[in-house]
Image (tube, rainbow, N blue to C red; front, side, top):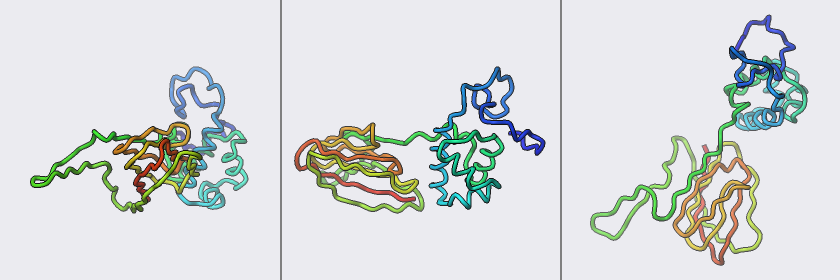
Length: 213
């Protein structure tokens, strides 16, 4: 990234080379156009992650609050310098605006996982997920019946949910791509995205662990 103050402020996102790397050599022509909706969603996500207000991020980036508001709504045509300054204010790499992290979803079926057996009892323990340092976990028992799915809006940034199905069957996970679970199956998914729990059979029971970092 060229940090020379003489860089033209008129250099816009449409001047990104085809490989999407700012200032990369060997580019042959401009990209098809700025991915404004992707950048807008990334800016909103990263600002939620930091817990900062529009006013504070704009102040740290040295831009007008109205400019940041327009960018988060998917309008405008930002310069590379503006986006770079916002990334510095958000403590986020520039690449995260154009290639956001993929949701981490893990499924462990009832007959899978690292299992350790007791020496003197018919007892087995299977590790499903280790608790990250500094995390807090809340544990819930879920009872659900077929009918209307439980559709949850995105929680706070960084929240992860773990679900182990005890009985019945259910569709569980990120909205638009839930996974069907049977008794003993486990799933974890990012709960800072819209998510769903839909019972498929009567008397579906589960244990849900909500993890906050």
